[in-house]
Amino acid sequence: GYDQKVFELSKEDEEMLTEGRRWTGVYQSLSECGAGCCCFSGNQTSISLSESVKGGALRATLSVSGPVIGGSPGACKSLQRMNIRNFVFGKDGDWNVAEKVYCQGSCQTLRAVKRRDEEGRVEVGISNVEHQQCGEQKFRCNGGECLTQ
Image 1 (cartoon, rainbow, N blue to C red):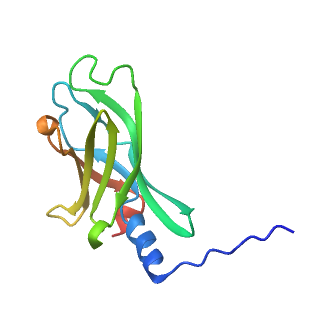
Image 2: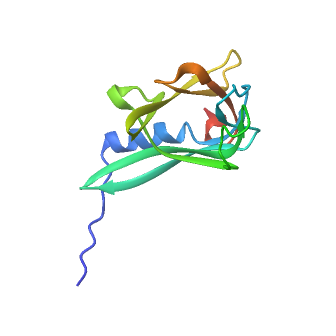
């Protein structure tokens, strides 16, 4: 018969999932979109947690998705929405930083940083490490797990 192993979470795995959920929710964009940039816009940007088991180890990553706006014509090509998967968080024990590296010819790093505003609300800033001209796009948590933190 088919032997399905039950995957048991370690303490580290549980911590990773708990910390990942602290990011999740619906966010509102607080930033203008610069010329030549393609930005998440409006109040329906969502950050979600994806879990998978690879080679007996739990992998949890964050995805950012939502409607986009171009800071200048053609900046988003013809995209109406973006879904950027596989942000890796918790590297070096820092649960408030998530990075997505993608390489086409040269590599680029999208870096998301979770912090709190003066009123204690969760904000996330996303920037492109190699291409700083678009600056940091800021988002404030509007609903979901990130509100309860």
